[in-house]
Image (cartoon, rainbow, N blue to C red):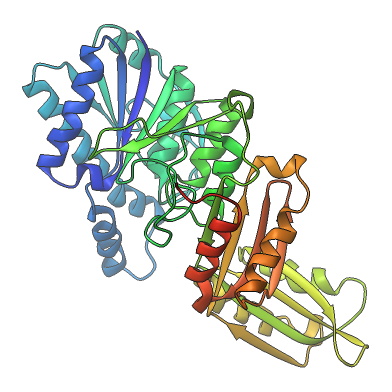
Length: 407
């Protein structure tokens, strides 16, 4: 017998037929003798609709009431799946975040889980009842309000619940059959990865891969929860996310990812003096603008510096406003903006023990005439910023260069 948490995203529960498909998978685990908890998202499109309703109701709304509205989609799914399971003779009960409870801080719209009290859940699961839990939501105990965990929060709910239950595995069901070496819609020779480390999955998630939400990977790595990514719509073993020690032979590069959610800002002829970087990036941090890649060059006049950095496209307008509002703290001659850029990354824990990984990336791009605008590196990642028009060419070239193409 195993204790398993199964999570199903919005496309997996998009309508009643798909909810019945989910019930088949849950019933199969129960029939195998496993204890099962299920975490569900809202049906596809429902959360966006609820967010739209809140925005139409008032331009500046109370975030506590916003959470009460947008969390309701998961309640509907949990109830419907429980009804379908009961109709098939499977003991099941729906649980909302406050009923378990999943205790969070009070940051409405982006709450963080602090504790999950699972004693009642464990007792009922041991008696053969399936716990169907509404994902994405929690409960702030001081003011006794419903909270939400932010978009993609159902993945975080599932991993956190698996950690609290001391589950043997957390299965994340989605519309893809695993984690691939690159986006198979662009690179046709991309192949599914059987096993990947937490660190690699975290880098992939943060660098543009949409398979798992970043916070859920962080939590899985912290609590050492084995996570399996697999498809709701086809059979297969999926991809297992595990400790590095559980993978016998590490590839130098495990995958190539990209993010189109980038905008580049360049400040030209900035006064070159101590503290200027703090004067630029301090106000951006205070305004909650996340700065990613940064490069600083001496200007042509040899007296000033050019500062280039990237932000998300959603933060671009706010970043420009903050810079203009703080011009008196640092001098610059001009500001240029480029939204037609993409960040491409190569990722692999094998980089730790192999030299020349970055050089291979630079050479492969140079052979295709692709200019690199900005470079950043970490222990297991090399990222470059390039013109958006070269995205597909860059991905295919790098995928081949690192020997990732399927045979």
